[in-house]
Length: 250
Length: 262
Ligand SMILES: Nc1ncnc2c1ncn2[C@@H]1O[C@H](COP(=O)(O)OP(=O)(O)OP(=O)(O)O)[C@@H](O)[C@H]1O
Ligand SMILES: [Mg+2]
Image (cartoon, rainbow over the protein chains, first blue to last red):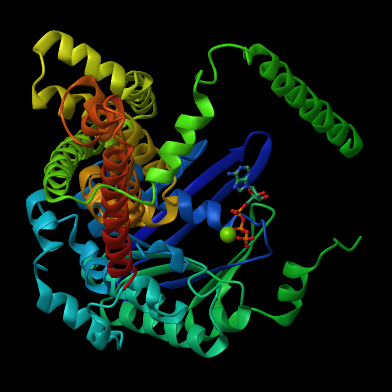
């Protein structure tokens, strides 16, 4: 594995009105690492991922992706090549056919004319079929996306990421509304594909079990702060109990 | 808190009832409301309902007038649809970049749409007839402007109600604002847009019939002529044709909706 720093978070802070969501957080993620963000509800996982996806701006501190401050990724093409996002299933446009949701991963590279024409005559169809094959959905090409099950929709979102091919994948509770079998299926696929392409993944998860099974490193957040940051196999039950404890022991 | 709210609502209800009662006093029931020969005429009109004039001449005239009414309505609503798409998308503000320019764009184009629909189609018709004379353009524009305003406003609201998440996901995949429009907003609202436009098409047929009272020809004009001649049986023939038009459009709209639900 290369030692290149893919994500550098340098004492970032984020406040909502007076509530501090993240307080002076710092960590570094190397290229190819599979990082799971865990921690109780309200710990700041979504906030952190949204900051990395530049859906939010930090109040202070610095975020670098591949050595370059996030603010310098003003060009949507550059940003899309670098950072991809996957969340829960309402991330897809339900009224579009599956193929168009998958091809949406190419929009950054396409001209307006080409993307418009593609809605009538799908462009680069082979690539979309390929991506759908890799997630096992090649038979649903022209199905209306909202007719698919939650697990299938999440696989469509994965296929879109395959088209986009970002170097960093940010995933916010990618399996929150799926049953255990589907969850494992999606996580295995996400981390497996990322390994093949040497992509870096940062995913928030509510299940510690899955986090340990599929990810190489766990960053635990609590009250907007890092509670621990360890390789998966070094995390102890004691630490996890303290992380999810409702009241602080005094 | 709750009991207070309930109390307030009761007060409001009472106030509205009073307002209604007061409005009844506002109408002068003694004179002007009923015809002198009132009931007799009403009975005659009612009786004619079951004996519409089905002679070949009248049917031919009814078909021709229905055609004119439908043609005006169709041309009007088509033009309205184009206006509504352009102004509605602009008024939704989704094409603007920054927060400030989005607000300005929304404000400006919502104002334009408001102006278009603030004036009733009949008033537009008077204005256009007064300025251009009795041309089909007067009828078509008179319909297109207020209907464009109504459709555009609804389209803008529909676009603004599209959930944020899929759009954010498209943005994250690198889509531009126009690409988001074609891949996110428009597919999400297409079905409701078509369904609402078809409903407005029905309304446009009725308006187009009324419009012909202004002297532009069509079913309404024929109804007026027959009423003046006291030929109530003819009146009903034309009315039935109007109803038929509405039913046809309703059927078409149902067909469209079913096909889109697939
Ligand atoms: N838009 C907002 N406005 C105000 N406060 C917010 C907003 N979004 C999040 N917060 C607050 O910031 C804190 C962190 O929220 P965040 O959504 O990042 O938590 P999370 O770790 O993702 O939780 P969950 O596991 O429930 O998704 C919470 O206390 C939340 O109440
Ligand atoms: Mg969250």
